Length: 265
Image 1 (spheres, one colour):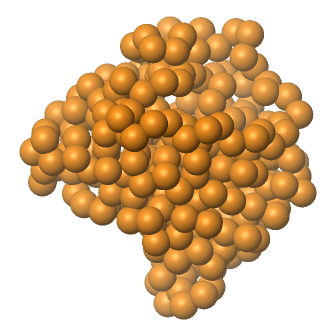
Image 2 (cartoon, rainbow, N blue to C red):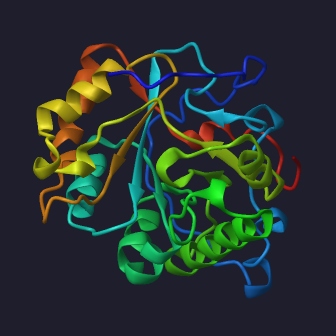
């Protein structure tokens, strides 16, 4: 079942960044000083280009048969070792979106993601509905999450924000953009996090991902679940990758799309 895809990004210049060929884990960067942790908009590092701002991103701006794998982290860590091992075995990149509460409760898991060379986005601090928050409250959520993720990972988080529940509104997107983040959502969620008790199976999770395959597709999965230790997305991951490869797709890194110079908007 496809999620509606919208992409108003036709002007993004990705030339020269195609590939990130031969993904290899990178060493984590040193943690930023405490003074930088409270204001993400002034933190060092690559900035999202203007073409990634102004709207939610549900498909990446590319015509290539390429897709991105992403994982949210807000509950348990039951699937993270399996997910990281599979990505390592295949030498594939992924982007992880932990909440700040998750980073504080599971710092070793967040550090393991960073140590494996994967990007870390921001999924808010406490996973609220952003439509119910004021601009100041949204800023507090984003900045608190940034501080928690930065502290746990020991590296610079990406300027990518994923809304809790994917519940975006134009004013919330504008607030997140003003903080220096692109709103990276997804083309399809596997719904594996629902677990067997939510009516999901590995096959259903794979089918939801495969049905969304298209140039620039962003697949959302989770490292945990509501399934009492059953993490369907961890089991589905190799099957999703197999299907992508068989269909001629390349798994790409979201960091390819950070084409603006550091410190610019």
